[in-house]
Amino acid sequence: MKIIELRNVGKKYYQKSVFLSLSYVFRAGKIYLVVGANGSGKTTLIKGMLGLIRFSEGEIIAKPLKYAYLPEKIALPAAVTVYDFLKNIGAIKEVKHTEQKIIYLLRKWQLSGIKKIKELSKGMRQKVLIIQMLLSDADVYFLDEPLSGLDLTSRKNFLQLIEQLKQKGKTLIISSHYPNRFPYDKVLALVNGDMYEGFDKMPSSILD
Amino acid sequence: MKALIKCHLQYLINKTTYLILIAVIFFGILMFVVNVFSLDTGIGYKENNELYFQSSFTAVKMIAVFFSVFFACNSFSVKNDQYYYLITFHVSRSKYFVSKLFTVLILELLFMWILFVAHIFIGFVFYPKYTFNYDILVGYLNIWILMIYYGLISLICYLPIKNNYIIIVVFSFYILHMIVNENGGVVKSFINYFFLYLTEQGNFYYHFYHSMLSIIILFLLNFIVYLYIDL
Image 1: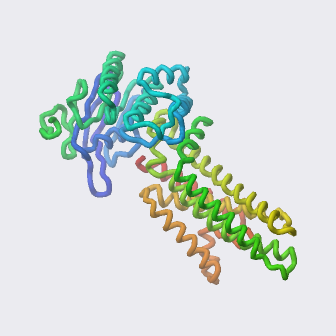
Image 2: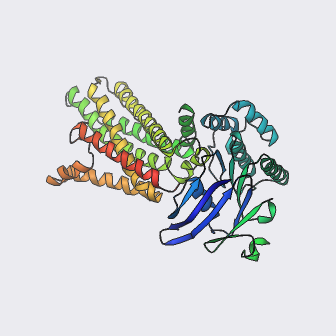
Image 3: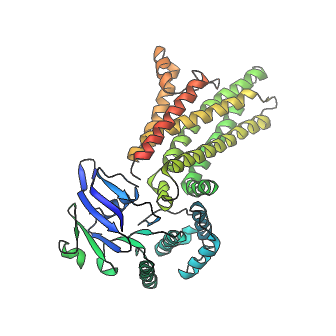
């Protein structure tokens, strides 16, 4: 089943184009791995699919499903406790049984809810973002550099999570500099403003 | 809506905002104290009351405009606006923008209230013949409207480019506008038609409805820009 279709989408910042005329169909229940060098447009592509930025050309057709997003880096409110922050995000997302869910996820990801966010390390903040993403059940997950800052144990947990989501029939669109770290069904390589399926046109420096 | 506003508050009330707020309020209180001690004993209490209000009012206007320009830009800076990513599928961009702007305006009203109370309190404490006048309250509410106006002006310049220099540019423009109003003749009537100006008596140069209309137009422009910019 088609969930998102890109039709000749392109993005320009002033006169500089990030990518041009990309077309692709994302289907349900698969893991897509979007790879590319720094500045190749991975985050831009994801943000465009989410409607956070506007493509300069082309169109995007998306099914009205439930989406979730794990951004690469985002500021969190420093003076608030982890629990309060998550509880509030849960309330905005209208999550049922928010408190139980938060407690369960905090335990699973070994994070203290009473700590203020300013006391957290980079990896711990990434866990907060992962938990907020998992609060609401979604059909499609957009994960932008999801392993950023995570230690080895948390990485393993995260890869298990990806497997679990896959088994539940969810669609995952993962962007990463490191293609070897993730399971996937399809690889989309962004190279010099074009998108290719597979690793054939990827520079070896990225694959290493 | 309550949770969304709470989320805005969690982000907007941060260390930078606190520091600027404390500095600005401290400066305001200092100005009140200086003004109350420089009252002329040779003139009547009514004149002294008016002098205290007018000299404080000019300082408060400047402080308030600076704070509103800073606060509006800081609230929509990349760092303080990215949390929309987390709730993008649950809250529309228009609802997010309107609720955030509403939160900013309420915080600015609170800021104005603090200065108003400080103005009255210092007047009563340091000048025995101080009398409260209803016009003082109206004047402060008008400053709040001026804050909204300059906040929206700075925001419309800031949103497309997200550059902090906009704070300096807009504030400098306000200073220039004040200078023009002190010296200009026909020019000021023309400029004040497009840019709101509060007189020393605490009233708008043109009718109150003119101010409201200017704010509504600016709000709509900001709203449209926000719907189309890249977040």
